[in-house]
Every structure is written in structure tokens, then in C-alpha cells.
Image 1 (cartoon, rainbow, N blue to C red):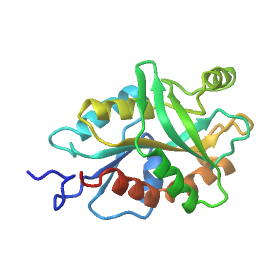
Image 2 (image 1 turned 45 degrees about the horizontal axis):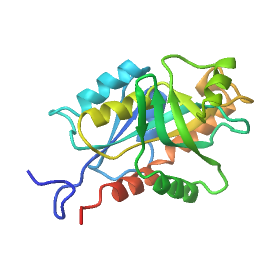
Image 3 (image 1 turned 90 degrees about the vertical axis):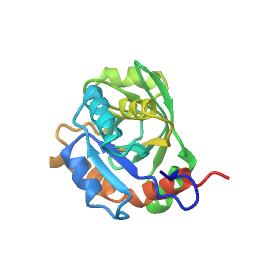
Image 4 (image 1 turned 45 degrees about the vertical axis):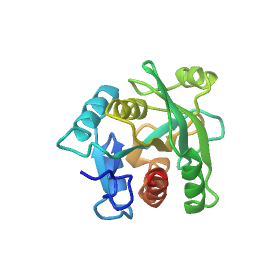
Length: 215
């Protein structure tokens, strides 16, 4: 079998993992490159993400895929707004820290794709429950800029199944001054959905950059 990173080998696929049906719908409706992308709905929470990603990277799935965790998140920093983008420099949770690949490429690609929209970079922390109120301030005091339930588990599980590029890009759906109750029924949620629909070209640019053949 040829190495997907060697010249002439097949392109390594890109696995984009998200938790919710609304996130999957947004990502699937975006522009994509046929044959290279799989959007995986994991279900909510870190344990569901671990199980789904492990299956997807198993021998009957796409074992050599680069992995991107995506979807919505809660912003922790003052001044964040629904529809802002978060590019993780690392993901964190109780099980450890996972550095992300190609953060600079993603920031540049997303900044070009969304001129005038803020792209935040920093640690993305994981939780096993929806975080609200004072708990957000506590996470922020530890340096995190955003929180979600699946990214840390997704990237950690991906690397447990072999070395590969991993990254996390999330769209802020609520923030300290813009806390939401239901994603699909308020303006902030709709704004975040529209942004998530348009991220795939940047993901493909990251994917091409991070899987270039070895020299």
C-alpha cells in the first residue's frame, strides 16, 4: 500500500468531527472537494467523541485521515461575539493537553475567508457538561479562550490511533455578554451556523499544507 504522504500516493482523507446534527448539516452544506472529506457526527460529550473517532479511524474506516474537530463553542473571553472563530493552539481537558498542527495556516486561511470577522487563537478547553455562569470565569482564569465538550477528546483519540495532523476550529455560538439558550432560534445561533457553513475551504487549505509529501 502506498504512503499517502509520498509523491504519487493517494491523498490522505480529512475527517471533520462534530457533535450535533445542526453542525453536521452546516459542514455538509459547505463547499468541499469530492473524495477527500468525511464529516463525522460523534454525538455529544467526550466519551461519545472518543468512541466515534476510534471507530472512524479503525481498519474499516479512514485510519490515515487528518482530523479536524469543529462545530460550535462557548467563548470565554470578554468581547467575543457569536460568529467569531476560534482556532485552538492546543486542546485541554482532565486527561491532558494536545498541541494542534498548522495553527498559523488556519488563522491565515480563515482571516482571508472572513474579512472583518475576528479569529481568536489560544487554548480550547474541554468539559463533560454545558458550562455557564461563574464556571466560565474559572476556565478563563486558567488561560482558556473557549470551551466545548468534544474537541479535546477527539484530538487525543485521533493521536492514540497513530501520528497525523490534528486541529480544532470552533465557531462561537455564545459568549459572556451573549449567552444563548437554544442554538437555532436566536440571531447569534443563526450567525454561527452561517459561518460554520463557510469554513471548509480553509480546512482544505490546512489539510493540503499539513499533508505535503516528505522531502
